[in-house]
Length: 141
Image (tube, rainbow, N blue to C red; front, side):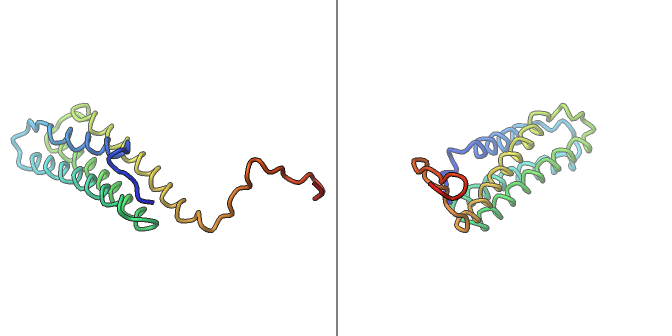
């Protein structure tokens, strides 16, 4: 199930997340806050790259790559929260970025379900054509 990832909503959300995290200003002088910010950005970038790679895969490999992208989004969120804790900042400081991590995670979860469903599709029977009348009850046409 190769797809054009650049046209997907998940791709747009992941790019917005990465660029938004990159633009954050860390107000703390603590080295740990800067490192947490850097790790959050790296995780967001990893999510983008793994998502792009997923477009080249099929079946369970694609679902696995999408799970890896979702995991990178979760790591980004965790590093943002570490940054907040170290800098002693309120969550509202990065509320937009946290909302983007939630949105990206939901979008990736939907794509994972589609990729998994695509794996099972060959075993299912095709639906009857709409123009064909179904037999009446009792087995007679």
